[in-house]
Image (cartoon, rainbow, N blue to C red; front, top):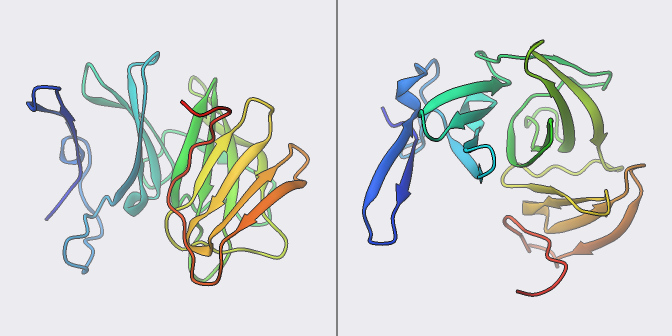
Length: 204
């Protein structure tokens, strides 16, 4: 069985294994697709001030916070091994089938693809109380009419407080206000698709 690992590569080309999913989890559902791992990691961010990796494990329906120095899982949000009780007043409870995310303060902003039988994607902002083990959805965005990006997908909170949302395989980018108003939209031609994006105020 194949599982995911975090490998760091030094400038001289040397590599170090920082963490392996096998260290902390046992697969419960093995995919039949060749080459697809059961954890199906699909997004990874490193937050230097926390000394932590954040890993989206799509196959587990979870987001993991991993301590870089210790190589252990600090917490799991979503999935069968979640350390949090999730609360929301949304019509549909979070499925946590997500891709890219944005971490800031005590918040996690997640692009949630959703399941194929639901046929819509949304953005969820969780406020985490690690001590109490609570994850409250404090903001969400679901476009009208619904848009379904079955793969990829990105989200970023801008300095203005607006949110940049990328519905990747629909070839659509939206900037959304805190009130859920679409401020501008970029749409690719039919068949166009996008990957992960990063908003820059100025070119480097």
